[in-house]
Amino acid sequence: MLGEPRLEEISTSISQMVMGDIDTATEARLLFGDGPGYFDFSTTQRLQGRFLVGALPNDLAGRVLDVGCGSGNVTLELLHHCARANVLGIDVSPSMIERAERLLGRDPAIALRASLQSVDFLRFASGIDTGNPDRRNFDAIFSTSALHWLGAPRQTYAALHRVLRPGGLLAVHQGATGCYAELHEIAQKAHVEAGLGDAPLRYPPGYLSAEELVAILDDAGFVAAQVHELDYTLTGRGQLDALAHDFAHAGLLPYLPETERSRTAFRERFFDAADALTSVRVRRLYAVAERGSSGSDDGPARPGVRADQVGRALAEQLDGAHAELTAPAGR
Ligand SMILES: C[S@@+](CC[C@H](N)C(=O)[O-])C[C@H]1O[C@@H](n2cnc3c(N)ncnc32)[C@H](O)[C@@H]1O
Image (cartoon, rainbow, N blue to C red; front, side, top):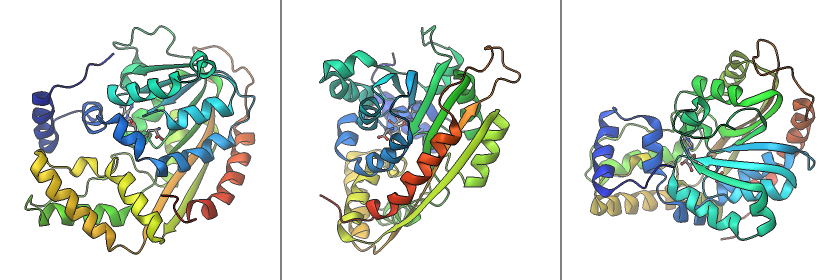
């Protein structure tokens, strides 16, 4: 279990981040240090994650790994939807895991099938420091809105392949190249206007095009891969306001300056500029695939849920997604 970072550690690390000499896992642990705040402002991620959950068969059973489970909102939906699955949610942020523990602990029947661990996924997959002998051979891997934060996508997808059992199912959703471009542009301007100088555009490191993701899945050894892109534009005032607040607890985090005072000035300028936006384009990737058995030391493939079945269900989910996601916001 990773401990909470101390204040001095955070400011040293933020300076190192700016200098580019800190690893992405430490960066993510510091950025996503506010689990309760994320829990309150992640309607966007919850809606986007719901389509992936909805594509899974209700009878999906066995051990499921949720990579980057955050404050547990979507993990809870996954546990309700797949009532025969045991889910291990992992996240590099202890604060996210604490919030998820509170959420999943409320219902004893859910708590029985859920476990949580604060750990960097790549360390988990490689077995370093996890003390978890059971870290491989998952029947399914689920991940939503998280993989683009993990850094090098090739390394990430190769590690996902390693922890899945032969014949196991991968079902993931992540950001696509160009997602939220308008919000990144105003974040950059707000940085300059708040007197903080130029900020390079700081997209999460792993945004990919659909073609790139297809190639990465193939190179990692996945078979029967299907990648779907969801591309929609938000124009309603309520939708744009809700998105800006959710973005402030995720995509905006790498732009935030060190001191509280500068943060306030920066955030005010960001929200002023967000008020003037009339549209934001959202681009997401959804992928399903299977781990084949060729070249595997982990034994022959056992039949499980087939990626082609889940891929068809996913396509149906995403057909209905556009109308749902662009409907007026509830808050
Ligand atoms: C935008 S949140 C998504 C959370 C959740 N899946 C959801 O949909 O609400 C991204 C999460 O990925 C986690 N994360 C980032 N890098 C990670 C890593 N290297 N290992 C594990 N989790 C990581 C962050 O701490 C954060 O909770």
